[in-house]
Structure formats: C-alpha cells, structure tokens
Amino acid sequence: MTMTAGAATVSESTVSDTSVPRDYNFAADVLAANLAAGRANRPAYIDPRGTWTYGQLAERVERFGNVLRSLGVRREERVLIALLDTIDWPTAFLGCLKAGVIAVPVNTLLTEDDYAFMLADSRAKCLVVSDALFPKFAKVIGGADIEHVIVSGENTYGHKSFNELVNAASTVPYTAPTTRDDMAFWLYTSGSTGKPKGAVHVHASLKLTADLYGTPIAGLKESDVCYSVAKLFFAYGLGNALTFPLTVGATIVLLPDRPTPDAVAALLRKHPITVFYAVPTFYAAFLASPNAPQKSEVKIRRCISAGEALPEEIARRWKERYGVEISDGLGTTEMLHIYLTNAPGATKYGTTGKPVPGYEIKLVGDDGKTCAKGEMGELYVKGPTSAIMYWNNREKSRNTFQGEWTRSGDKYIEDEDGYFICCGRQDDMLKVSGMYVSPFEVEAALSSHPDVLEAAVIGWFDEQKLVKPKAFVVLKAHDRACDDLARTLQDHVKAKLAPFKYPRWIEFRKELPKTATGKIQRFKLRSEGHL
Image 1 (cartoon, rainbow, N blue to C red):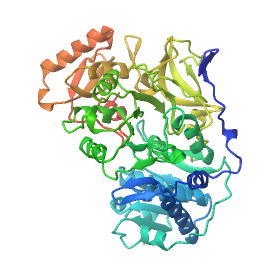
Image 2: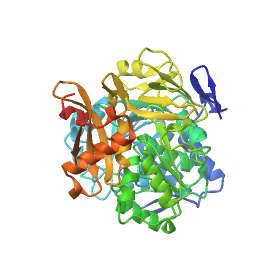
Image 3: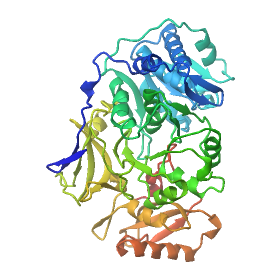
Image 4: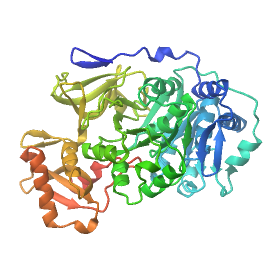
C-alpha cells in the first residue's frame, strides 16, 4: 500500500531494521529455520554435480566456517570469493557469514587488473577461486595481502583444495556472535559508470530484502524451483538465487557456465523452473532465439526483471509468448535488491512500478528541490537495506549516502497514478535544444521495431559541437544493416516521440559493451566520441 506525503512517495510496512533481533547472524538463522521446518532432505541447490539438500548445505556451511577458523582467518577479515555458480558458492558465502568473516564475492568476468584492485582495496586474507578463474589471479596474489588460496575444482595449481578442506573439516557447530548491524559482506558495484566501489552490507539487510520483497512481492513459496540468469555475485542474483529461495525453503538451479539463450532453454526443458529472473537484454535475446522453448514446455509462473529499464515491447512480447507478466523493478548494489517494482497483477508497461512497501522514494530536481508529479528528477530512496558506506571511499560515500537517503543516480518521472518512469542514468541524460532527452525513451522506441534486438543511445557532438542523440543498434539479423534501414528506424522513432528526440546517427553493431550483469556500458560508447 502506498500513500503520498508531501512530494515523497511513502510505502507502508511494519518491517524495519529494528524488526531483526539485535543478536543476529543471517547464515545461522536461515539454515536453522529450514532444518527446524523439516526440510533437511529437501533439495536446496541443483548444479551440474548433483542435488544438494538443505541438510547437506547446512553441514557444508558449518564445515567451511570451521576451515576458515582453522586457517586463522579472524572475524571481520575479508575473504575474496571468485567462484562460478555451483554449490561451492553458497557454501563459501554462508560459511564466511556464519564464522563472522566478511565475504567479498566478485564478478567472475573481470580482468587481471580489476582483481588486483579488488584484492588491494579489500585487503583480503583469503582467496576462494574456481580453477577456471585462477589464471587471472596467478600474477596478482603475490602483491596482495593474501595468506591462503583455496581452489574449487580439479586443478588446484598447487594451492589448497576446496573440496578436500571441506570434507576434512570439523562439523562442530560454531556461530560468531554477530549483531544485525555487523558487516557481513561487500559487493563491488558493477562498473556501468566507471570504477567499481565496495558497498558494505550488514547481516540484517539480507533478511530484510526477503521480508520486504522476496516473500510478499516476488511471492516465493517452498514449492518453487528458481533460476536466475544474473549470477550470485550480482546483488540481484544474490537475492534471486540465495536469500529469497532459502528463506522459504525453495529449490535453486545453478548454471556455472555463461547463460546463453540455448543454455537457459536447456535448463528450462530439464527442470520444472517456476520462478525466472533475468535482465532486459536476456529477455530480448531469448525471444529472438530460434531454440527458445514453447509455452507448453515450461512451468514458469513468475518472471522478474531488473538491472535496466525493461522496454515495453519486450514485456508485451514475453507475455504473448509465455502468458506470464514480467515484473520489472529497480534495485541497486547500494540498496541490495529491488525497492521499486511492478507488482504481479498491477503491472503498467513502460514503468518501473511503485515503491516496495518499507521504502520511501523522492525525486530531486537540478535545483535541489523535491519534484512534483510529472517532473523529472534524480531518484532518492530511503529504506532499511542501504549499505553503510563504500569501503575506503569517503568522498563517494558522502555523495551517495545522505543521512537516511541514498542517491540512486537514476532519473525518473512519477506519473499521475504513482508509477515511476525511468529516464536513464544521471550521467546518461541528454540535453538537446535545451530540452532533456531520456536515452531509455529513444531506446524503447527503437526496440519496438521488429528488426531491432537491442539499442543504446548516447549524446554525440554534431559539426557545430552541439549534443544530439546517437543510436547504436544490434539487429536480429545482422545482414539487414544498411542506410535505408537506418532511415526507416529514424522515421520509426519520429512517429513515436517528439521529433527532436530522434537519433541523428544510427550505427549498427554486432554487440554492445556490457557489464557481466548485462547492463549496457554507455560510458564506453560515449568515450568513442569524447563526449
């Protein structure tokens, strides 16, 4: 339920940070709750190695926590986790939390330089890494504070074996005496706007995202089988494939490999997946895949999208194809998961929905004043799951975390019905002929053309050094690219939007630069034009 108080939209909820007990450890709480509910023999995770029950997961987590303690890793020291999505990921993550050690899961598709930065920034004492990823760390661990390297997989490169350590570890129960406000884990921002920052989260926030969104909005149940295209290292994927399903005793399917449309299609045919999470880019690619399953071949009852604004055309085509609405939402690494969303049965295509109960949202204009409905401003959010800071970055922390409010960096408009419409990132907004142009609005218009798979729009200098929109377009069939089609797409946009918003240039690409979580990196496209 939402109400308007002044110019800020407030969502009512009885859930707050103080609703979590002061003495609290998320890993201990969620595992004990499942065992107490009689789920010891119920499947928790399914990965290529097999099925792992809640009882087995609890034992593995206990063992890994004891591994860290036996190695001398102390409370509040950091463990960098660079693991593919297998049972070892939740084992390591929850094992850290239960032992009071800070888990620092990182993107598995980064460069050697990225990992060197994160090792130095986090000052991690232990690295837990998949054998397929170890070569990117081999040259940089010597210059870091790393004291122990634990490798998951068959080739340990002369370091400690994850499986051997876990299998030999003690099962004597131990839970660090943490509180709800203790640091639990860090998540580095995805880098869609530049250098990543380590957002520091506390134990209570995991439970709160489940209580505010996972159960009441996503509607997860014990009988669900969940799959997330977004990997576990991503804040979105962490909720999708760990926090929410484990809170209700559901089952999670993990895919360690890259989630291509063909690979995900195979999973949907093999497993009775009922809750499906993806990003807009993937939904578009899946719809364009000739190997995508038919509606009769899948069991999906709930679809969720985040990461970027979901184009209306993609949402409509998905509903026509599979008979299920996509609930588009906005969440950030800083807030841990979705706080603005379209709820099932109350979806308004072309918007990101309304605030999740328990969060308050306001839009702030360039003049620093709160915007009225219909006015565009930067979205600020207040809620109990905000990160407490960016590690080792006081300037950025002060700029983003302003008292109880967190700046999102996203531009939005609230319509007369209380739904919020995404206009793009603060850095992505264009001012053309003195008027703001949302790149998302132009991208959505382009994506509604049947030949377009995806598009990215940025500002580009014309001959007079004035900013105009330029579009980078990926076609469903690359051989269709030509000047005639470019003009057709320009006319298509003019027919849907105000004429000044149409892209003055269209450049066809085979792919767009993206983060590993599927967000388009418009700053890389902008750098090509030195804008």
